[in-house]
Length: 333
Ligand SMILES: [Ca+2]
Ligand SMILES: [Ca+2]
Ligand SMILES: [Ca+2]
Ligand SMILES: [Ca+2]
Image 1 (cartoon, protein in one colour):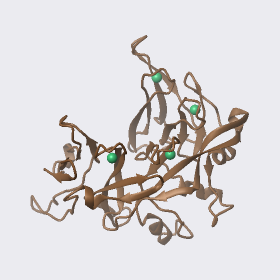
Image 2: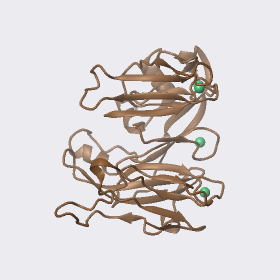
Image 3: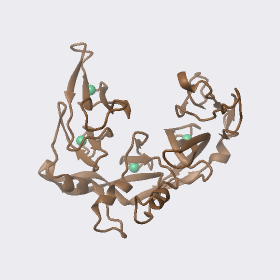
Image 4: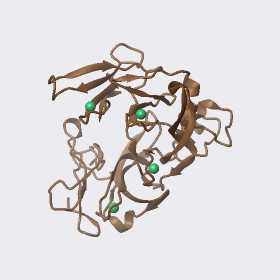
């Protein structure tokens, strides 16, 4: 539950527009109040934002912009399905010709174990609000990083939600691949980006800190290639008695489609548990609650990794900072 915004130029006029989506707290997804809105940025012409409503086939709060047919206009990938809505310009989007056909036009579900089970597609393409869309292997085609909870599928098998353990990593990068296909919405053949089962590569696991929380893809050592920096937490218990503890910063280099864990070479004192005690029974909280930021925030030419301090109920949260010293991130706070 909750609202979030995505900033993206949806009409290709070089100014950023806003996607507003979400569900109010304590309101079911089928209740009034659910809206997906595009706010058209007209600040240089009429000095306002024009509201455009977006009504996907199935309501979902997880929609994100990717140019799937490579025409320069960002299309909307909707996590439900997943489905792709082709951007026709002027904030108009193609309706789905057929939800099933649309889904297989853009997503390859062909798991050798599950040839005929369409509903399992959601397992492999379980898009969420913490993914990163970028070209991770540098081949010019967009890819998607999807964080996950390691051991989560096993938990679902034990809870009877899945009949078997899927052969798929929970945390992964799905590398996009260009294929020419007949796309019903475009009424013809087109090169489109497809996300396929066989192009999924797992993120190296960290067993004691099994939840990938938030991440950033930035060039932290200024060698011209971006690194994937993941904030992890220890996720224990099962719903509704689950709990997140501590933090672990994982750093990955990506060489084409090989994902290499360079954490120990790149950062010191990168983890903390949550076992301190202050204020009587209150636990000293080492979670990086608001995730991580990776930037040169003090303009000294070196990157920092840090979490933003949470307010209100999270008054015990720690605000750690690691500073790049030219060869390694050193904890300074
Ligand atoms: Ca715009
Ligand atoms: Ca497009
Ligand atoms: Ca790529
Ligand atoms: Ca780099």
